[in-house]
Length: 579
Image (cartoon, rainbow, N blue to C red; front, top):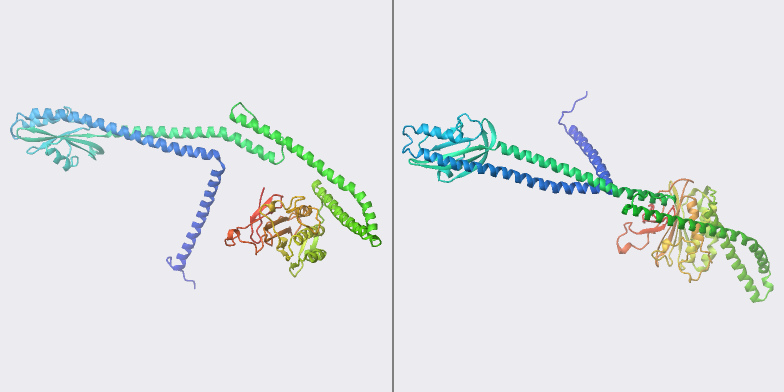
């Protein structure tokens, strides 16, 4: 049997509360998206900011003037009505005093007729007049007379009657029912001396016309102000558009120029400042195009010269190598000085051949002829081969190579020859500059990428050298004694190999704290990298400014697109690429 819960049960109440919270979260999310969109539009549109600021400023200014003008018009209309009533009250007081001065008692014959005639005369002579003005005569010992007949009780306040009874001319502005409709009215009262005491004369004047005139004036002022604000906004939009449009055209033209469309130019119209800007921009673009084409031609000639020289030197180098190998093989039968010369000749030929090989490889990258032969490769044996080949050098300089490799195979679609060359360059540099301290090689992998870090604890890199370490022929200290005799092209070639894989090669270093290089490659050829399995900045790196380790330390090095990579040193984070 199913029992229905009452409408006010805790379960129903909790469901309603949950639904209300869900609705509130949806509304809050929509409001947040709208606010973010509005903020983005505000930041991107100069025209919108100028028009909005103009509208707000003009609205405040026009609104202030409109309020002052409307208040001044209302004050003038009220003062005019008060002046008119004061004149009528003075005239009415004099007239009523002359009429009542002939009577000694209000009970005398003909007094009531005189009283009614006076009220009618002061009201305009017609007891049925409907102009809205009510004349009231009252006092001690007489019955109040009004023209037209009106209940004066709600119209004249006790405070006003008390002031007039004390012999003062007083007035008040109030709201009440007059002539069958509720309206704002003005009451003026004045004492009238007689032989039998004091009589009070009141004028009750409706302010309908004044209020209507004030409303019309306010409406006119507001309509004029709104029209003026809209006109100012439209004018600001037009003027801003005249200025912003050439700037936008210049921005789009600059973007096309930066994209390689060197023939893009701005249209020059007129002779004003904007036309001068367009002409100057075009002249700058022309000069840049000329310089870029000239530099490209020089670079092309330089690359061709390097490639041609490298190829041409191969033939004589082969001949010299054959003769040197023959001499080196027979060095035991020579004098010690000649034998030493044969050894030096062999060593320098090795360096010369290595330099030619690197130059040929660089020329292939420059010409765009480098090809990637990717195949599924286990990177663990690759790391072991590199360390075995450099074990002799490490032993001579007193450096221990430590490995941190996972137990299972690490398979990735890479070119093993190029990856081995990159690791050989990185490990060789670490051994050379390790200052007889251990060098750690770490291999990491995740679902989308593999990474290898090479960490040394030697001299490290000075601030700014992270930007130069991948430049061709650059050395941190040209005077430092070197054991490997490198060509200065190893890291440049390694960077090109990483780019050819669609990967990253990045560097971190600190003076006296060593350096670490990170090679990150996609696990599948052609995939796009987003994160790295290993962190760029080592865990034992110095804290930034002595503060807590919160990812504030920067990692600097060339990114996947050749730009300088700068970003937080968190594990798995990709450094932000900035040009």
